Image 1 (cartoon, rainbow, N blue to C red):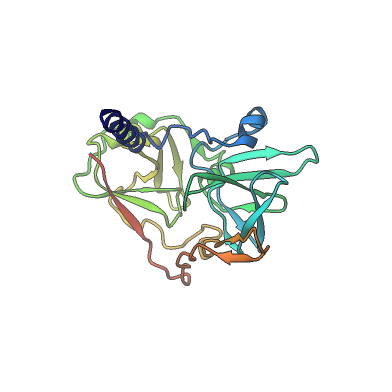
Image 2 (cartoon, one colour):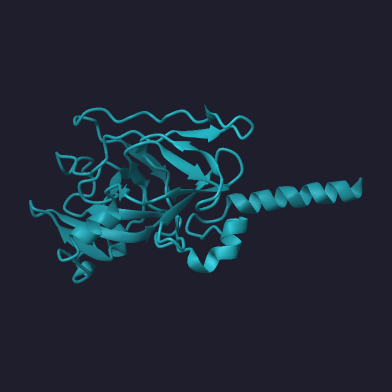
Length: 257
């Protein structure tokens, strides 16, 4: 009986530790293919990954070129975290299926375009983003809610009701938009990263037009292959698709402190 209690306590302790791990810690999958090919697998975007636009139904495999486990419908892909190029030159993207165990799944990235995101924005505007004179924003103060955007012009933001008093000191680079508005990028601020609209951090709508490619496309739906029959059966419901161009900007409130 004592051995059982000790074992149960150990399991609970491990579970508790697992829930406190920072989102910035790199997850190493327990996967045979990954273990054998880890030297050839890259993770250029950390745990964030990148999403891709699937223009048609896409096959999902347990390993690159391995057994087909299901299909992803046309739409926005899951976050692709791992990248691998096989001996035929085909690039593969790996992602985690969190519906059950953290199963590693792969799709071919041939012909796929990434959804416009901060990586896209940074590459497009690299000549307009500077790391100079960031100290001038260290004195910024705002008692109410401020907004942290994925990139200038994005519809995705975090409404930070609680934030560091000196949030402006976290700015590492600055971008000036076409209207003269100043934006500051932060690599990390209380578990978040993104862009502040430095000209008015409390403005929930500092722009009128959505410039994010793929913003009006729904999330892809995964359908699992029934290994006994070869048929495809749906296992995940589609997320709500965004509406027309007049969709209201939705900011998820994050209380940090």
